Image 1 (cartoon, rainbow, N blue to C red):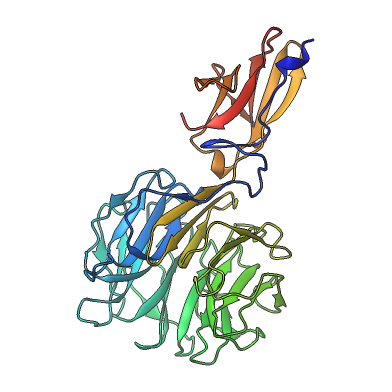
Image 2: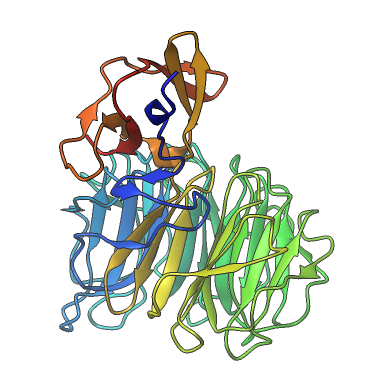
Length: 405
């Protein structure tokens, strides 16, 4: 047995080898234009993205762009240009989209638009014109909810037919800042900006009734939900207490996390609520923080920026962020490679994570070279793990990585 034949990259990313599969990767600037981005949403695997700009940076109003390849390329959507887009939402598969306008070019309250074909065409819905701040979607795209900033009627609206019809819920008129929804659309959570009553409200029946939770009165900026709606995470803006709170019981009780005090603008959650990503506005430390233990601990990532919105894949391994002004960034947490011997073969395996989508197993015998070649044996999928069997070399080193083809 030649010991040199077992050299392996234990952690890899789309652009090369990483030393730590958890948080070692960098946020990568995508090819999106440098607009004043405000809204961001993604499919459950994080690969299909939709972003909304409040302005193009030159006072001409904003646009909506979509990507189907983790931000590698972007396509301008056919949604009306020149509007101050505020928020976007996506179904699990990225096919059904909703986008809310804060105001038009004449500073009038704006409408809500929907798309049923990943942004190729859009329709203005029957939702009333309002100064919309946030829109949320169930995973099937059938249930939508949206909140007004308080500069309009200050209400929370729900649609149960993909935006065809809308109904004002029984939530009080308030100065709403953000809204989150469970995957099935039954549990809604909305936070007041602090210019109203400063409370967090929860509905467990798609908005039919609402309960004020015991979360502290605050200038809330954002809220996120797990897929089942039991785990919530809410963050305060810089004029509040600057903290992040979590709930494990749909808002019945709240605990403060160890996140640093900051001027938080956005927070997103994995489906299980364990992985969180939160962004500072740029008027705090300007960093993006990640927690992989439901807020117990946090790690700072990225470079300082004026972050305005973040999104997460369902498994929390793909994260994206938009800045205002600035670009759109993506961070993919690479799966770790594992190697075992099976007779005269090597069994290489890696977890089927969203971040591994579109990557292929490659090998090379000399790291000084650049001619990485795809492993000829296609991997199989067993119990959530990809497995590839490679003949063991007895005469040369072998290096393996996952990378874009």
